[in-house]
Image (cartoon, rainbow, N blue to C red; front, side, top):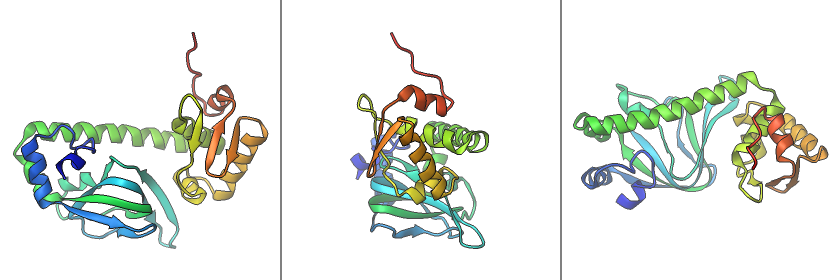
Length: 226
């Protein structure tokens, strides 16, 4: 399990003895597609490292509407900030988008390990600070940009060079919720981009045909050329 733990940025710089300690208190979790891992408001005793698959973190409103907060990919941890709270509860629900494998880490023991190592505390704070900056950037995107700009920014961030091919990875309804647009709005934007010759959609794959135009729609600077 120690080698698997090193897949997570949070654990990659820990000492072997620390990884062994985490392993002793950790457990493996296997989820089927759409299976719930934990619910919003449930007591939080563990946080998680995703080894394979994909997870969605979402909140439920009073009327049952779902808002996707984050899509978690392999190598990422989630709910780790809760180890700093007394009697924490999960602020979101977590469910598998596809069959997934995770490691569940004991929050109380991990917190005790942090109390014993100032260096480890600073490593964790560095990871959490990077994530916070990312979330602030996402809030800016959701509040300051149009639906077209949000979709374009998502496509830019997911493109694979040099083929400029993007695998949407998740259902359109999930992606729409993540981008804070209605599913029909997402479909309309994707169709418009296709008709403008900016992208070409084939199933779950999107090929970028005009990266300059996509960057303009995303309100991003074009890449430097030589």
